[in-house]
Image 1 (cartoon, rainbow, N blue to C red):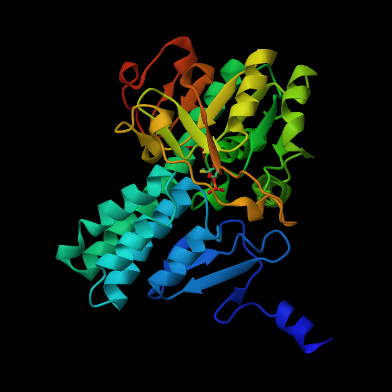
Image 2: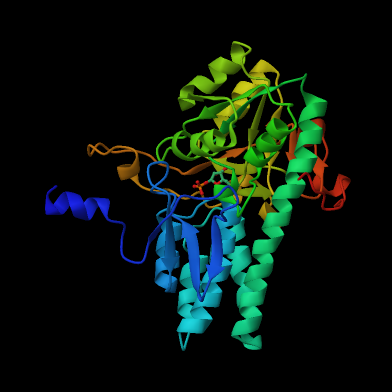
Length: 352
Ligand SMILES: CSC[C@H]1O[C@H](OP(=O)(O)O)[C@H](O)[C@@H]1O
């Protein structure tokens, strides 16, 4: 093996090759550092990254080594804890964390929440960051409970669900949002199957969702993004279930690019379009999706051969195409005319 090949097969310094247990947390605090699953390496390599500087956390967020609204919120909060422990003047690093990616409301919200505690000292900051982590773990379990109940109400037995991007434990800490509902349906013997949309250009569906579904023993088929609406038209999908990066005051859903197309396909096919996201992703301060900054990740991710390419990483699904939003505290049926104000927060529930 040439020296170059051996280098390629050796993980970067400080990384711990791992074969993950089913309860491996996607992102966590470990002995004074942020530890996270390197999602850029999956499914080929199961590798944990140990990040000891804020710059490394910012970099991990920006290159989607850690991704998914709840997961990057937790990573951002833990990054603030790292900043106050390692930097004499952490404010610039905290701003860099907050600005690492613009669309998912969880990141700025978590960084602001933890940064507000900086005057109380490093231990208080870490405690606040860990509280966000624990809240997201509880939220995943609760969304599974609310989601199983809603899908069982909306669909006939053994529904076949199409999902987009990746919304399992990799996008949260454990469990997941939309895929957390899928796992729960499967465990309860209530799931007919899954169509996983590949989700170009970074293939979160093809790489990450298939990896998570395979580990959970969930029957699935991978599909190219453009096949979604036609599979729905052919009667091969009973409902679409996806996550969100930000849900606005009017119910507009900002999510991975391609979500809007699936919503149009679902509307045409007359099947439910269900969004699953924690209350930490609901943004009442932003009136509509038109006001949300949509991250553009540049043409190189789309075209490796140099042609000009558009690459908005997210799109906006208007609230009237959303059958229901399932959070960890309630279900709001926007297409039926409900608003957030119509449905007060309910209790956290538990499916597991
Ligand atoms: C449960 S949040 C998952 C959400 O985040 C993804 O975006 P990205 O992979 O760029 O972080 C996508 O929009 C998912 O629906």
